[in-house]
Image (cartoon, rainbow, N blue to C red; front, side):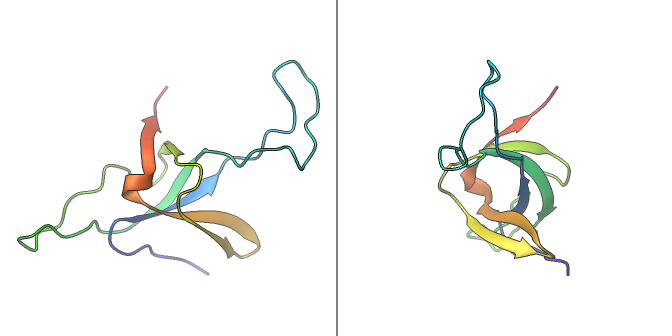
Length: 96
């Protein structure tokens, strides 16, 4: 199944949850936090301004991004977890 986001929505594949601390201690599954980082899988066309013109999206497919902890909706596609966010819920693009 494929999913094409509409408007200013973005489909993100969250990074795996951290199961260890930086010092090597294991974190129980109940204490693991939701990741706030992921890869952009698909983007919508962008939202319309007051004149009916499309506003270009700031992110592209393949970008690594940081997003809000409580933003978006979780969706499951072919058994994999994804997050459907508004572009405003994405805070930064990660570059090397």
